[in-house]
Image (cartoon, rainbow, N blue to C red; front, side, top):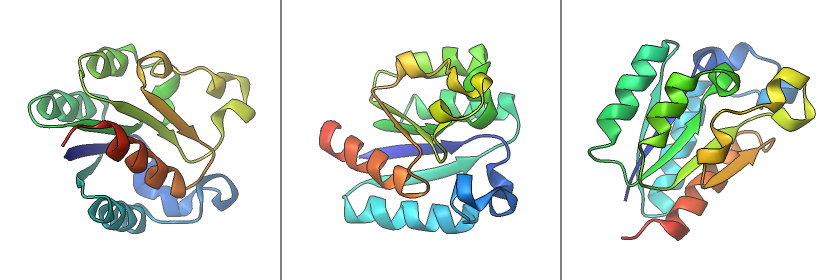
Amino acid sequence: MRILVLNGPNLDVLHLRDPTLYGGISLHDLESRIYAWASELGLSARCEQTNHEGGALDLLHEALDWADGLVINPGAWTHYSYALRDAVELFKVPVVEVHLSDIDAREDFRKHSVIAELATFRVTGKGPDGYREALELLAATVPA
């Protein structure tokens, strides 16, 4: 089972962001954990990160041809990117929306997700471990 794990803007500087909200981990360390968790679960993960919306769309379009599941942390795009929403809507495989922080308990503008209604599952506020939960959810739903 092949899973695209797509992280959006500012996750490349995750290690510089508020550790109480984002887990105090670098993107490199997060991706290392994701690869280890995926391996344990019998999944094949491909981690990608971009700060460019068009780049994210390209990665999503490419994954339509090979991904059996999608884990996406859209970052700030969560709240307004209908282009990203339209690309996610094309997926016919399970989609897990992940957020390191609990966006529902933060500022009002963060509570709205244009991706939420498309997601098979949502995992928020669990820090880096939320990605493990996302992979576990996919492992339980994606056919072998």
